[in-house]
Length: 525
Ligand code: KIV
Ligand code: ZN
Image (tube, rainbow, N blue to C red; front, side):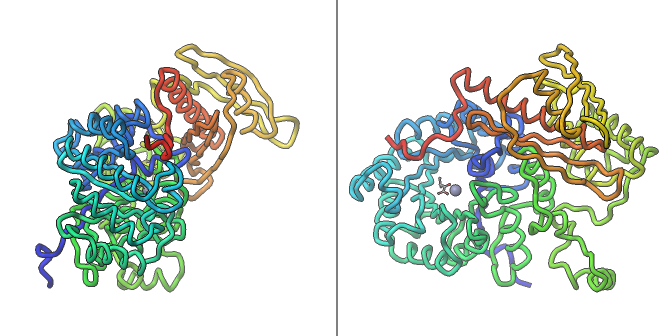
């Protein structure tokens, strides 16, 4: 047995709430961000990048509150290479026990051309901004955006300037997911060898997944000497996403024989947070996704099932329990009591206060009345559904009746509560979903366009719950809503209304002069 206590530590930097939330449609509410940050802190993430404070009042408020709440993790905010961004970032993170400022500028030829800075001008800018950040905070991370497409000599020069100006972590982003494992390792090795002072700082790797190599590139960088991996839950992020936290952590754990590095992550919390992020971001996890996909521990073929029964290691390189899945999955039914529900929910990673449990119990009983067996996935959908369709929402579905079949136009009778007052209408459409969505539009006129409508069965059987995701777009704002119910049409309308509620929230924030998600990287002045 190797002595793990002497193995180098790899810091896990989670950017689900910043880079992850930048994915179109992945907007999270303030409360959801606090909840995710608390879970990240509890699972042992070393650094949480909580947002981009200058981007909006909403981001600022979330970063500030997460900074106040965090117990162990360092709390980091992002800032472009200008004093205003950096000051705002500091204002937000300074409440943390361990604050960090992360400032960046695009150093590749393509990115230098945007602010139209010469190499020398950019070098000066890096010196000034990192010095400014370091005067505010003794924990400063600097990133040369698009590092993997930056000339090596210039990359070494800028990294040296940042270190001399006081950066304590140098992050090397593969912003467009362009590198490959060997190149990723060579780049870190080159920087460690060539840059004076490189041995005094931590090098980080930040990989995007455009070519599907993000996790492999991150691990290669670790083998070459990077000691911080930047990642997101479920690999959430712009375009094809980021390195997935669960993949890096489990790869380091399972292949510790060839990658002898330690992380602080409690892997048994992975599944619960993965499911929660999928729900609040509206980005469902693909079934065959490594570690957290529904099929990651499923065995279908006869040979595999036979092998598993004889020895589970024949077809599994890790145990479901290692990532927080309970080994057994005994369903609950309508005779199951509160204690059984509480125990099952705890097993699934939901530690509920009494009032939350009461609420969930009522909904569980209603579901059990309609469905013979309530499986783990049903309960997860139910818990997430109550959390995403909250009592204080502007719009609430009160009553829905749909007439459908082979004859005539389909019809929906809907009662919607709008700011506490009930309104009812009958509408028709091409199919029951179309009719029901028309009814919503007639009761609450809006210009949002439907971008995505997706239905997934939670479990097998004709009485299965359906999880419906709806994505709406209005004036460039995108919001995703989700809901689950044994009645697909009910779930559809509630998901639609949930997305509308999120758009309303965004609209209210921008009316108040904030929430301009998506500041331009170009605005470096
Ligand atoms: O991908 C990237 O380059 C980034 C930077 C802001 C670090 O996310
Ligand atoms: Zn990124």
